[in-house]
Length: 269
Ligand code: KIV
Image (spheres, rainbow, N blue to C red):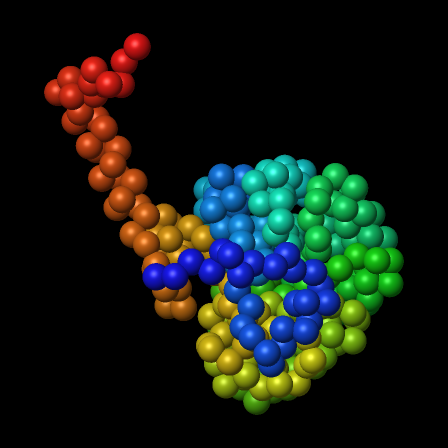
């Protein structure tokens, strides 16, 4: 497998926007400096997703993530991947109105090196996105299945199954674009609808569970590297069996300790 590191070029919102219809964008989540450093120069963007509340903090959904928590993890990611375009995912309740959203986004820019923030919501949140972008905050939108709506929607539901929903999703995408977002995550949407959404806007769409016709893809690192064992969504491709590798290595370590194979002469002072 070839590693594309030497072709790396630090991204900015102009380059991200210009990628549309030229090349596919790759985004990956990261929550700490160690993994961010491994992903740096491999992915175009690193998202500090509020999914960390589930995979990292062990909570049942993303709703209890706090701004302080997101800032802490974003600082770590920016320390580990100084050349990456890092996006902080604004947690639930931190953009309930435009003033609160701007106050919190400014806090993110003041306290971290994040290049942008991400906000869930379509037409309903366009006025907030517009207020942020008019005040020099770079915003990535997020429509379709929106994990922060899980309790109000009564579950995680794949979107775009009816003509009516398709029309709404296209309206959402256009509203987010008009509000000034530089890119748009489309999550959990029927592939043919995600394709139409991507063709309806001039900003790049980044899909997750939205088929291959978006302008890029995003995956949660712990899902794609096989560390999150509780369940595997249909859209995740497992590029590594991380959990088995880690468990095997730790079991070996324990055996070596028990049999006094570790440490050996070379491993002592
Ligand atoms: O929180 C997250 O990791 C996300 C991605 C799934 C897009 O929002």
